[in-house]
Length: 315
Image (cartoon, rainbow, N blue to C red; front, side, top):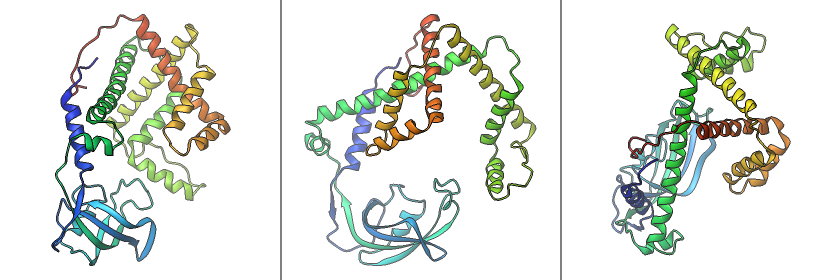
């Protein structure tokens, strides 16, 4: 279990107040600086061609918030309202949109207005602006959210402790086919070259596929083998414990999990529900973690468990 920390609520409240502090248009014209809120229009181009998702009008951007591609916000610093500037930036190599990763783009940015942020106020007025009755209501919601995050982290830590205890039991040989499948999965995740190989094979189906661990040194391969062996052993142990103790995933369990997935995508609930209804394999995949959690809960009920109180930093 974990001791609640009022400081976390106050720190989060301070961030929320800063993010929602009012802004006012700068009366006397001057150049943009870090901390300003810039009202901008922009068009991003790669090799002179505009790309999808790289255009916006009337966008509000706090300079120095690091919410844009690295270099974009710094490129606006020094510009004056009413001017249009070119801001060259390079997308990070690990950028989420793979077709933009590592590419040099030039953004044509029109700086319409500069706003200054007022001091952040933490009061009932802030709470009502955010949809709460008063400041205590806002603090209560923050505390509840933080507690939920802690409970999730605590569950993961407890689950890891159970799996570690299972893994420390007597070793046994694992089926070669299951090991091979898991080893390839682990090696692919560890090996940057594997992603390049997969990309190349999309265009060359006749080429012999190199091993997914090609280019990995002996230590990395040994680590992949150890992780794969542990995962297969734990999977077999969990399956056997569940079978021996008649632990099953019911239709109600999967229905609840699917509804939870749908709830996480506001406005797209029906699409998510239809996806699972039409994809039996997706339903099977969602059942796996449910079964594992049920077995973990069974083990915790049967095992001798010692509660330990920790603080948030330790967690």
